[in-house]
Image 1 (cartoon, rainbow, N blue to C red):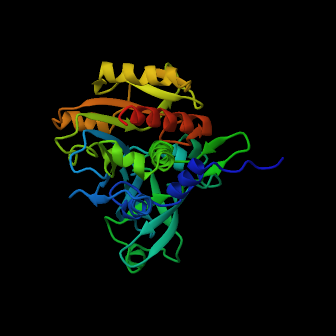
Image 2 (cartoon, rainbow, N blue to C red):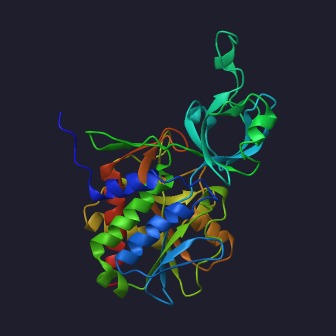
Length: 342
């Protein structure tokens, strides 16, 4: 079977996923987005916290947000055998990352390693599969000839060094994307592709800013950085796929409520009307264990109408999967929304 050619939005997504960006260590992926924006006539600047704002307007009334930080780990300490203990960045489901390769970013050099269960060999531990996967029961095995804590320290690795997982990106002949971190690089790719489709001339006529946040996975991404001129915030994150929710991977989800409460009713109604009008496949949904940059902005006291959309993503914070149709549906709904202001 001949492999499908990747649509541009998938090529953008692949590029984003190939750049390591655990929350707090996002400079490279933001540089990538900044370069795309500037090449297409969109001015950029950074907030004090390090989020990227792309806009040709000094006082935008609209904001579109996505987060580019991902789940990850950080070095906590050194174990006696030269392995590393760690602390989680955000909420990675460790079972889904067990055995995965990692990059360890010391200040001087990048090392590779793996996330491993303590005493993982079944030939000496016949209860290995029953062990709880937790920070206390797992470690990072460094790919270096180190067998003592002092030897690992001598490599230049230290507590506070960021640890990033490989995304494992795969694009199937049936249009699915399998990867870690589709939350929220799928939503980010939809925004970037929408901007490229509209072109800088149209984007410049719309009073909008694009906000790429860098601390969403730890809850305070959009707490700051949104100017007072903004009255409406559309968050493009992921739609949940799972038990007792309506979302599917081939549709865009429009969120009515998450753990922080309901999103703006009239904004949601406008989004559903635009989806119907433009024949965009969508689902209205409630996400029980979910928060977004919109949640963070509202909790910080911003006076905003907030809406939330995103492509349906299966197995969030684990071995995620979405579909090209879902990403394109999110992109098309965003474009339909923005065109209302031309």
